[in-house]
Image 1 (tube, helix red, strand yellow):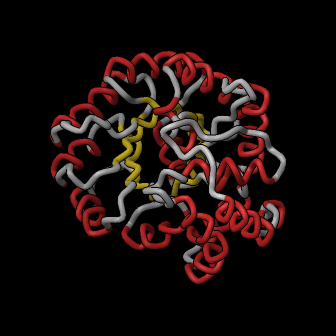
Image 2 (cartoon, rainbow, N blue to C red):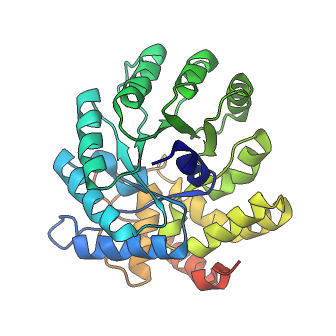
Length: 306
């Protein structure tokens, strides 16, 4: 797999699929196939299996491996197939080996969650995975604690296809982009559609999305507008989904996955609740708000055509 192809896909939409559960709480392979298949059919450029929207840290190692194998089989040949890896370095590398065997074309490296992680050692973690990986990788930055010089060290690794920047500190992002202006690594908005115009203005390209589970066509319409420099159009398309994204930030972002999964349930997809420590269920008032929001959003097909 060419790193150039991965970088091109990162400049599009990186859609993170949810993980559906059956009544017994285990992963529902058949429903997972349907969820991922819809995202792929819509034309999402890069599909990430095992991202935070997929509840990576609530799944066991074996569940992650199984989920990724099922998801990759459902994606077809068009999107880039990306496996999320993380936790301990040994687990990340073990997940990577099995994911590549199952069809992964790229890896997304989760930000280390250790509360005592040193900034330079966090950079070393990303680089260690990049060094060992047989496919291109993407670093997922969720903290401003890593200094610009260390971020630049990550970006300059020859196997680093992109960096998913997932904090609202646009000044830090701008500093990082300036420090790597001679580097081919793609900077991606890791805060979804609502932040994408600001990130594009700072020099990032593409964005991550959980909305693709529910309205992939809306996400694609926003991306097309941004790529064409039609920022007014992009903002107009973002306005109706802004309340959806705001709901996801409730409970210190603990409702992030919950809102996406309950939106699917409301539309007839029995994907089950989010696992603890995510919020398992929305309050009745929030669920009613979500139902109203969904009713006001045009179906994906309305935005699917070029």
